[in-house]
Length: 371
Image (cartoon, rainbow, N blue to C red; front, top):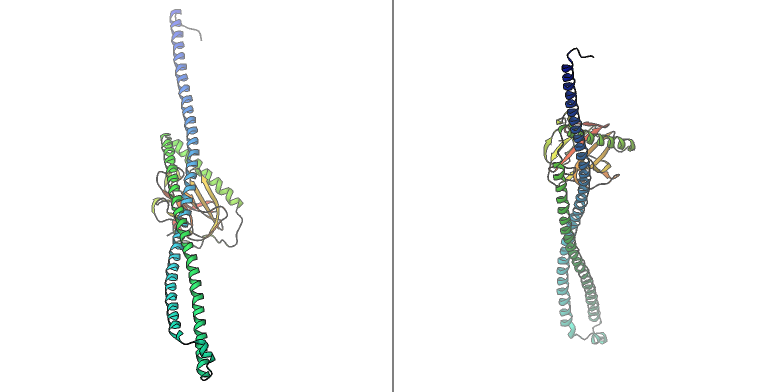
């Protein structure tokens, strides 16, 4: 477009337009740099979080390993203490039995000594009182047999007592070893927990925007949905698993604790809780709500250490954020059987159990089944 003004005004307008263009270009460049910087920050933040989440998984698994070892040690400790108590009782009874047998043998020996004034050979040679001799001989034979039997019983008691005393000592030594192992395991557990706390603290510093948090939760849910879909495809129908359809309001909760999050309540944005979060102390037993087969037992992002149980007819129950898992894939479990220990794996800031019931892959309200 040609300039209708004087040449001087035309030159001035062109200069102003050029300056405006340069300002706009500079602003655009600044915006583009800001966007690039923000994208770089988001990329670095996500990369840092991925590294920290891998470390969190490692920390959770380390804690799970030691916690499971401690749980097994506790069982061994209890079993050994029961054996020691049983052997102590056996030892006490055998000692009393030994004392009674000693007294009986002493009494028999005193009786034999008292009647020993009769010369046995003389009685045999005396033909005048044959009936009396026969009775006396029979009495002596009876007494000898009784003494021999008591001596054999006494020897058997002594042998048993020696064996029980040896077993008792062995169990006491075993108990000392178990207690030492338990102390070492608890030291290792505390170290693992400290490492995990540092990881969670680092994750906390990598603050996410609401949009990023929503995206993260959606990703976590998608991971769970994909895992469940895969599990559903590989599950083989079992004729002895009848599902949960007839068990509404008849099952017990997997742990006793306060309800922290309800089914269907708001989680983040438009996302809602598809299960319940139950507050409970670390180390408490998590029990299966009904008979079934373990089809998943591992760490899953967003859910920590997770166990999934197939109850048949499309019904599953999920138990997440555990400290350790007590069952493996393929294990059959019965109602009320311990399957895990309460924890806070998966980056939780407090201990508890996340619990779901699903039918044909769709989450249903656990309150309809558990009371």
